[in-house]
Each structure stands twice: as C-alpha cells, then as structure tokens.
Length: 94
Image (cartoon, rainbow, N blue to C red):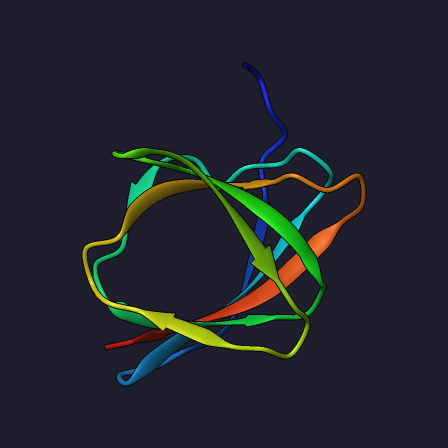
C-alpha cells in the first residue's frame, strides 16, 4: 500500500535530547523503524494511531496532552488511522 509520509520537524537536537514534531496527514506513515533511544511522546491531537509491529497490528488511542514513554528497541511503522491530521512531539533521550 502506498501511503503519504509523515512530516518530521526537528525542534531541538543537542547532546542530551532530540525533540521532533511529527505531523501525519490522514493515512500517513513514518515507515518501519527501530528506536535507538528511550523516548517520550506528547500527543498534540487526540485520535488513534495504527502500529504495524513484529507481532501484528495494534491500534493505539491517544489523548492530547497525555504523554507516554517507551524504551530503546521498539520497532514499528506508525500510521495515522484518523480522517484528520494527527500531531505528536517525540522526545528522544540520548
């Protein structure tokens, strides 16, 4: 399936953190990737993301302003499953 690509904008990149705003048009994806650092996600929009993982597809409902964290090694493709733009800020800890 051909999906649009999510749009990353790096806001901060220093010796301690990388902060990236991710904007997902409807149906957009990050592409499959593995996280090389622990990270925190701060949703700016409420909605559902579809995660393609090694263990299958997972729907992840998110609420604006309700942050979560994951450890190094997470592998997935993140897809906007909403009919509207979805935005979150990702903070990677170096």
